[in-house]
Image (cartoon, rainbow, N blue to C red; front, top):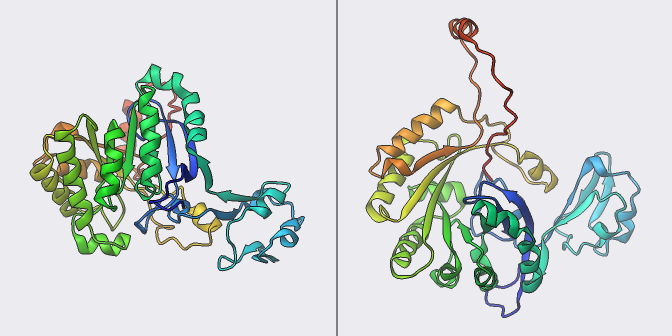
Length: 352
């Protein structure tokens, strides 16, 4: 990851995701920055935590040619019965093996981009933004870990009339926020756990700085033209953030400190689609066997949120949920009342 005080117009970017509908209003292009100051135990983008480029092996692409073993300058790759093994203590993410791999089974996650090149790349999607009232969201990881580049990037986009959004966990310096906020049309801010000890257990850090930064954003909005919009997002993680006490506490904080600033508070249901990412990075994941939250529980937590003191109209929930087995009586009633319906091809929302 490029140092946050570096004057260079360069940043380490994980991915550019086009046609996104989950990172702000309208159709958006989301730019994922490498590097995050938190280590959430459920993180859906574990490849974004480290600020450095990382190598991973895609097993079903590998043809077993073993060319990577010979080309690696750090001797970090070996081949064992289960396939390619990467020694993380030796690998420097240089990408030499990925360039050599004929089947693209080895990939580097994270690439250094120059400011002008990244701006030129993302504005290719401008037609979609203009027609849907969308824009560009910077996410991660966390863009506040590379604030000078993030600020310049959003500034260049705003100069071209493109709506911009900052998606952040808020665990950063106030200086970094103050650098980026004037160039963000809106902010998407994560509030995970209201109790600091719980937050530390789940993410590796307490939440005091996060809560102070959230209040700072509210104050900043009151004295500056931008940002104009603030969304709060709370991941609903089984046996972690999914208690009524946690949701009520977050709501009470919003009501006491940000009541007139928050336009949307979204409860994002847990999904387990990222399990393979942990496998490819040789990382354990404690939520690998966890089930999705039920729709009934998401509705219950949304109701807790609505009754926590906030404007109930700002509360929403999204994401896939677990289908509970029907009782025999429910199944019979459903069969008796069933009407023909058109097939639904829409996928459920996801939490990243």
